[in-house]
Length: 319
Image (cartoon, rainbow, N blue to C red; front, top):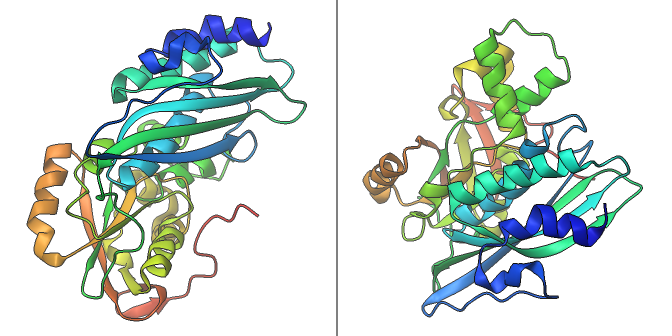
């Protein structure tokens, strides 16, 4: 295998947008859209940190892409295209690359996006995959982390902690789950399900928003810091799947709220918009749960049945 052969065989077929020029040029072009802002985000995933070497190649590709689509969704943006940087360790095979590219192709069809370009190289270190994703949002309407106000409510999409539960299972944490419960949690670790359709409806509803990658408490903390407010989270309201409750029992709430890799959206909004939020969630086919409130002050607190729950570590730390 050589770089240009890999690109021509596996990745050029994914470059369906005209601005990619079939991956035969040194750069790509993104057509301007009058009345829209171009939103850009990038994330890297690495073997041994974000996935296991033995994970299915298609799921590695989809995880790399979806963690970026989650960021765009939290900004209210509609994804359009992406760049891919792939650092391959010794031992990568044509079959592995074909499955990896097939995973990307499936997600491109699902989300209506195209590969725009990127880079492929060899490394003596672990496999790393970096995606830079581009999306569009109506001009001036990107939902930032910095707009939450005292009196707002805090909401979250989907369920929290499933990916961490899947990781615990893969690390052989003892459990008594049935096969369906186990498969559900492991699938959420391998391939996140960010609320893409709901994200398209965030602009005009949310005052601030953040995708949950490092942990619910940690990421709401980023929103609170950017907005200059305090957030109180009701632990009992945090949405947990039945499978996760079966796995962790009474520890489920705290472990879920401080684990990463959820790729759901936490956002603030005026309580007066609750009906509109419920309608948008129904249209997108996803659950949205009100889990807390914004007040004057700073930081995030977690409350359970009227008492403060101590949180030693609010989420995943990269260093």
